[in-house]
Image (cartoon, rainbow, N blue to C red; front, side, top):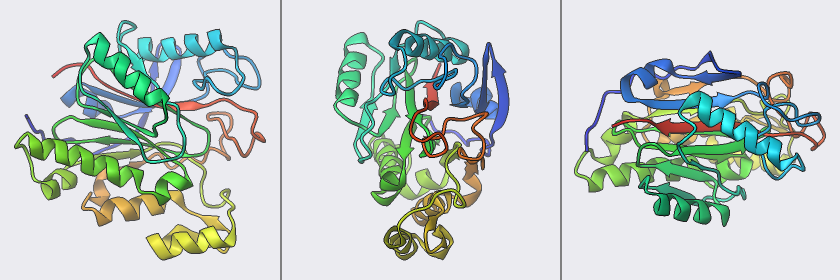
Length: 282
């Protein structure tokens, strides 16, 4: 299994056809891996889902959702590539997509629809998409070009799904006699997309206290507010992922509803933006 020294992670706005996304162009240039955090703009859905709603469980027109997803794949890769989208259930199940053969992709999609909150790509030319409206979108890229796309709401942060995905990627690499776990994790890039920030994320006092006890004092903003980004950074760096290899878009979904969907800001009636990843070549 070939390993690479990945470029330092960064996120910048890019325009792809009708879509505005946040991506890492240097990563794509070096590895052929396209990662993207979409905005709510560039699609065909109407209010309250306007316009690039990617969630198929929010009462939007199913044809609009299908067209929006098609636009994402076409703009960021090629329309012919299959797309896997899980049914997200706020747990810690990870589905691996290990082959781009049609039967393997169909099996992965079936497994993901039973409930999963992370997709791990160990093959090329299959796209992964997860959907969000305040939870933290996380994309992990390993030095062997494995990719994981993770859904981390407060339950996902609490159950450590990002760490689980990172360690599963490291185990896959070790099995291929590439890198030991410590070296692998230290060489990994992590990207955090838009999510609800601490000033807007009010919780119970018990949950805020729980986060402080598990992840440190920077994870508790005050008695009733939690910083999910700091909790994730605490988790990931504890496992050996370098802080300078964690890129945070640092945009709050609640405060930027012109760009992103927010379940809290829009009282639960809204669409979903996405975290997308594909590796187009070896």
